[in-house]
Amino acid sequence: MRSELKFACPKSILDITETLFRIQEEVAFISGGTDLIIQLNSGQIKPACLIDLSQISELNYIKEVEGRLRIGSATTFTQISESGLIWEKARCLAQAASQVGSTQIRNRATLGGNIAKASPAGDSLPALLVLDAWISLLGPQRLRRVSFAQLQAGEGAGLQPKELITEIDFPVAEAQAEAQIVSGFAKIGSRTAVTIARLNMAVWVEINTGKERIRGVRWSVGALGRIPFRLIELELELQGKLVNQDLARQIADRLTDAVDRAIPGRYSQEYKRQAIQGLGYDLLNDLFPEQMGDGR
Ligand SMILES: Cc1cc2nc3c(=O)[nH]c(=O)nc-3n(C[C@H](O)[C@H](O)[C@H](O)COP(=O)(O)OP(=O)(O)OC[C@H]3O[C@@H](n4cnc5c(N)ncnc54)[C@H](O)[C@@H]3O)c2cc1C
Image (cartoon, rainbow, N blue to C red; front, side, top):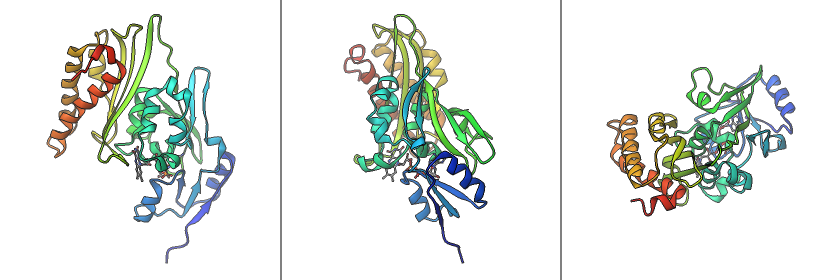
C-alpha cells in the first residue's frame, strides 16, 4: 500500500535546506500549484513529500540591483504584469506575464514554476531567452548559477532532482549613445479565455533613437519544438537594417523558414507557417507603429 503524501511548509530558504537534508525520498516543490496539482491528480508524478514554497517571502520580490533585474522564483505572473519596473526595463516579460492563462491562473502561477515545468509553450521562456536571463539554483549539495539557455537545453546543466530555482536575473541593458532598447512579446493561443500558446515569440531590439535602423536584435520563438529557441541567423541578418515594410516581408519569410526547419512534416506545419508570419507582423507593428503603417 502507498504511504501518505507528506507536506512540508518551510518559512525560509534555510528551512528548505534543512527539509531537503532531512527527507531522503522523492520530493516535489509546489509553488502556485497550477501545473503540479494536475500532474499529481493524473498520477504523472508520485512524490513522497511536497514542499510548499508559497509562504517564503524571500522568494517573492522584483528589484533592480547593480544593473540587473532580480526576480524571486515564487513571484506570480500577476505581480510581474503589474510591476512598473518590469514594464519599463523588460517589456517583453511584462507582456508575456499579462497573457498567461486567466486572472485566476496569473494570481497563482509563478515564474519559477513556469521555468521548472519547461513546457515548450511556456510564455515566459521566449522572453527570458531574449533578455539573456540567468537562473540561481539551490540544491542539496550546492548553489549554482546557469544561463537560462543552458538550463533549458539540459545536457547536464538541466534542473536536477531536489534543486530549487531561487532567482531569475538579467541585465538591464543600457543603450549606446543615440539608441534605445525596445522589446515585445506576442502569442497565438488555442482558446481566448485560457490561452496555452500554439506559438509565442519575443523580440529585443537596440535601435537608433528615430527607430529607423536596427543596431542589435535577439529574436526567439516558442511552441515550435521541445524548447523555445533563438533565431540566430535572422538576428545576424537584421543587424544594421532599416525598419520598413520590405524588411517586415523579409522577416516573415525567414520566420516561415524557421517553421519548416523546426517541424517538417508535422500536422501543424502548414498552420504554423501562416501563423508565425502574423505574429511577426503583430510584434513589428507593436514596436514600430510609425515605420510599419498597417504592415500587412
Ligand atoms: C488553465 C491553465 C492555463 C494555463 N495557461 C498558461 C499560459 O497561458 N501560459 C503558460 O506559460 N502557462 C500556462 N499554464 C501553465 C502554468 O500556469 C504555468 O506553467 C505556471 O507558471 C506554473 O507555475 P506554478 O507556480 O503554478 O508551478 P507549480 O504548479 O507549483 O509547479 C510546476 C512545476 O515546477 C516545479 N517548481 C515550482 N516552483 C519551483 C521552483 N522554485 N524551483 C524548482 N521547481 C519548482 C514543481 O515541482 C512542478 O514540477 C496554464 C495552466 C492552467 C491550469
